[in-house]
Length: 133
Image (cartoon, rainbow, N blue to C red; front, side, top):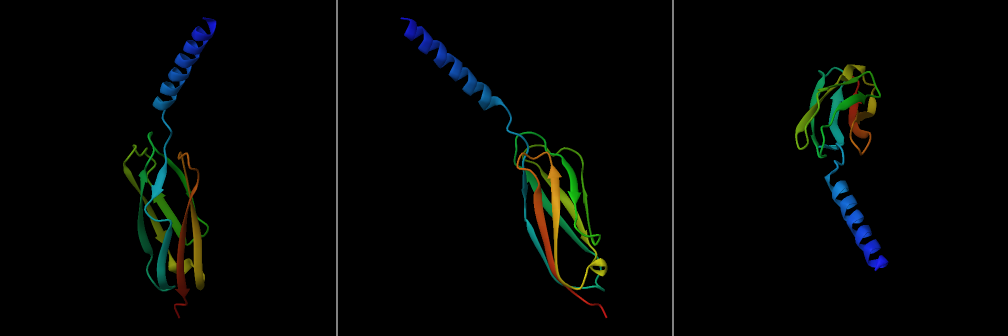
């Protein structure tokens, strides 16, 4: 009889834990529309290049982009600091100034820091920069 009671209590406890964990949010997550942006061939005399890169919060709680680090002064990123609700889209506005980029093959990594459970996301910018003279 004691085994039956113990089994029943254990079963109820496991069921309760499963229900509780199923209802807890998993967190925010970010899905970038692209992770590699190929800008082609640019001249150092070219105008600044403006890129709008979209992303989606694929998590179940609001996502906040806290910081975007660039590896070059030729690249800047503007982003909204307001929370992005689950399932909604946000945008990173990336500016590349070819006049500040070194000549040759250009590879730069942007690091996107956020409240996403998947951690830091990397975006690679690539181009061939030609001398403007």
